Image (cartoon, rainbow, N blue to C red; front, side, top):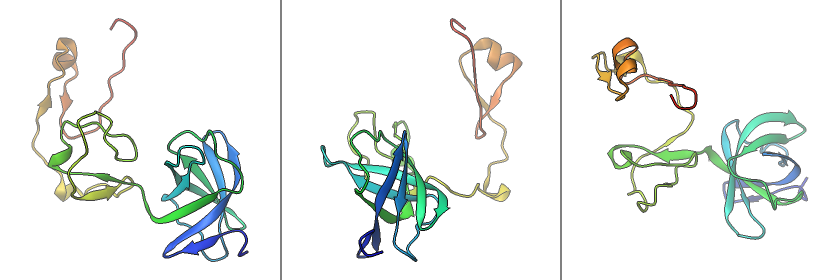
Length: 166
């Protein structure tokens, strides 16, 4: 299996076996299968940029199915795909308030880089009930009907859907 993958430090490299739309299948050496949700990096052959994907499924025979977080155009079978050994992480804390990030934690709001600090994986356990705020505070949407008839509470998950012109 030495021709299938190589180990670089603590990062293990496999080979792309299949590309279908936004997913890639990567074959790794025996005993070095990455965990579900681990980030896999592939260097784009034309631009040199790293394309990050996430392990979604173990297919058997040392092959994993990954979902790419960016386009797969330009990727080819046989290219190296490196297991980072960790999930995708994003910046957290006060430094992120008011900023816009993509799924990889990179700022996309043209306000410059984010100061270094804590990074958390995008897949985490929910906070325990004792860690959550019990105060009730209304989130003002600015839409009078919503604020009056179906107000939203701060701190929870909400969704607001409407048709065109609503």
